[in-house]
Image (tube, rainbow, N blue to C red; front, side, top):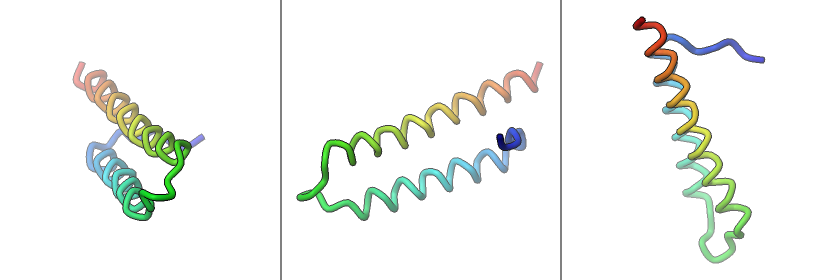
Length: 65
């Protein structure tokens, strides 16, 4: 398992990388041949990013205490 990212700059970099990957995948999709599974993968990518944001926010709250 990887180390937790607790540094705010590293968290932002991680999120930017994930969003960049999402955009690359999105740009590469051909709307005429996209399957439901492809769309499900895109939704899962966004869900994963949202979950990471929540985790990062919770860590930040814990560190502030």
